[in-house]
Length: 252
Image (cartoon, rainbow, N blue to C red; front, side, top):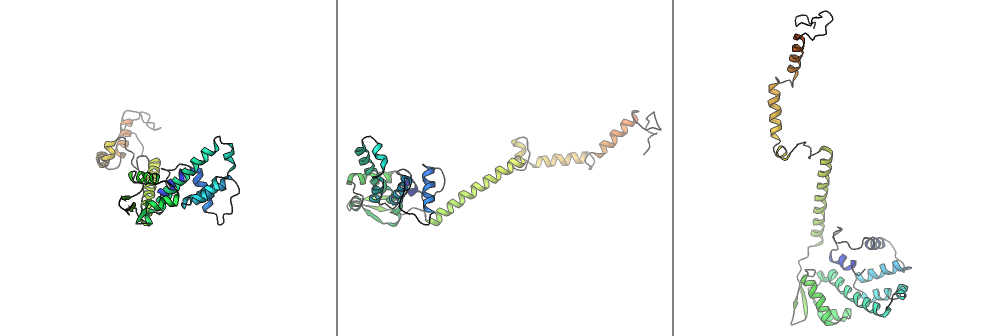
């Protein structure tokens, strides 16, 4: 949950598997989103999914209220230390998820207001936001006199993002069709032995025309008649009336 939610918030329109961290978590979360009605959580999985929905909105308090009472923490050694670290981590990831999700709708964000909302120290919030700017995850810049970050709206719109997805799917579709054609016909419809013939297909056509003119324009029928005449002249005919097999004794 703490790894996948900021990743999903960073690329909400990217459905590819390049940056997929947990396939089972996403599948369970999508199944929950498709439900018409979601009641109170009844087991650990439902509790984690409900906490994830709260964390996606930046509501870290609701997320902590659901995660803390889980029975699994009783089996973990150093329970208090683990819960304190988890509490701090939920606050940090809630801040990152909030910035990924809602930064396009703000012109500027106050550092003091973020510290108050997420109950984090000033230096921690400053460090998280600066790291996001360095990694180009957050397109913004610091305004030191006012202790605010000014947003640089360079993110593509929803229509542009959908157009990019459509272009990627179209290129994938064309590539799959070419592979299927190559599998069925061999060499995208042309069966060439090497690359030189594939790059110069007109040579095969000229060679075929030259051979056709050499055979008299009928594709080799004259050679068949000549071979039969030579065979009969050598005395190899099998006519019953002319056992000598000469050329003048043939019956047509």
